[in-house]
Image 1 (cartoon, one colour):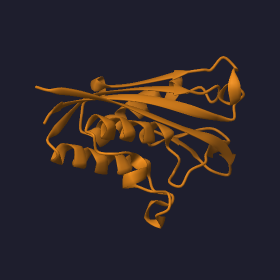
Image 2 (cartoon, rainbow, N blue to C red):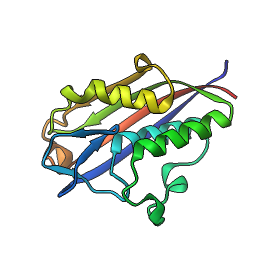
Image 3 (tube, rainbow, N blue to C red):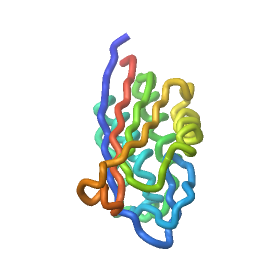
Length: 159
């Protein structure tokens, strides 16, 4: 089996009056993430990692923020669409690894539901999905709590 890898990245600033959704899980926090869709930065980074591994472009090309169809869209549904596209191109998703950099909220209580949601959307076992949360040690705007960053790596087999 031929193996391919992709790296995804996303970042969003926190805003008031919006739920915080990460990997399709609503996190108890007074702020959410600014974005055209639901702002789910974890799912956005995973989408870009998959598309990168399959050499199929990026999230902005498939779901542009200039298209009202994606306004407030649930990103976990966009991930399901990307999984179908990747599978149709002859690839099998092997695993996904995610690192979230955020000072607050603490994400430990949400990691398992996040892994399960991503696994379900990807059609793989939760044992093939890793989600880790790190702080930025109070450095830069992320460290001062202005937003968060996400890095994701995806591994594909086939094609």
